[in-house]
Amino acid sequence: MAKREVDIVVLSDIHLGTYGCHATELLQYLKSIKPKAVVLNGDIIDIWQFSKRYWPNTHMMVMKHLIGLVAKDIPVYYIPGNHDEMLRRFKGFQLGTLKVANKLSLKINGSKVWIFHGDVFDVVMQHSKWLAKLGAIGYDTLILINRFVNFISQKLGRGKVSLSKRIKNSVKGAVKFINKFETTVCDIASDNDYKYVICGHIHQPEIRTIVTEKGPVVYMNSGDWIENLTALEYNDSEWSIYRYMDDEKAQAINVNKKKNPKETPKELMASLLQELSMANTKSSDKLNSLPGSMEAA
Image: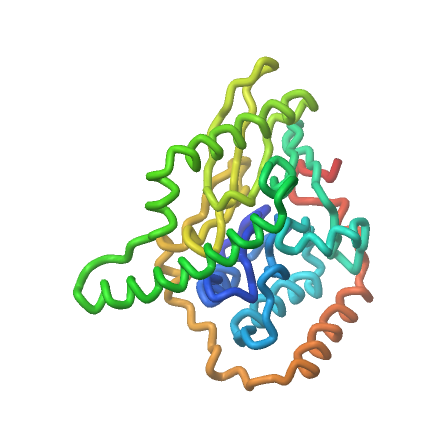
């Protein structure tokens, strides 16, 4: 199957290492596209809830695929989020075409684009991190319960339901928080002359224009790979929301997870280091030559 070409792909909130992560579906999506640049916008590996007892082969396959992109000289930007915040100490680190940054500024067709995870605007994250971590555990537990409910529902011939979405949509406080989050982000983006702003963090895929005192700003959110299974794509001078559930071609891809031999942690690490070593032997100039009329500002 011919891969679909995409100029830029923005992924966030994958949460590798948790029970709720849809790694197989993400791998199918990644194998269906040929990106010219990739932005990993936070919470890629869930270090908060990481457990040695739970690291399926498909989760490692996602990591190897992403590192494989670097080995192919494709620019990959890693912007840490709150669940992988310990990687923020490595900002500025560069290996081949992989670069770690706390935020990313691009200029596309003459307009400035600001990309960051978004947890800096979460009051709970800033003042009650223990409460945020407790909430993350509860959220992951809810996802597990949701999978069991959907298993029973499908056996009964009914469709899938999302318990967390229903809770969010029914709680006025959650809706108010999302609206305030989006408005605050756009106000600050406008003050700094950005026409576009891209976030993750709140697991709510969105593209909409918000009018600020200094003019309109296009707010975008890449969603997540826990509930929505979404990404942001830039192609043919337009941004769009990719939805895995609408992509029959990606769903038909066989990731061959059974054919991949079970590797020990040492073997997996050695494999990743080999991929990174290959990537580091190549030039990193690609980081400063993004597709089309795009440049890193």
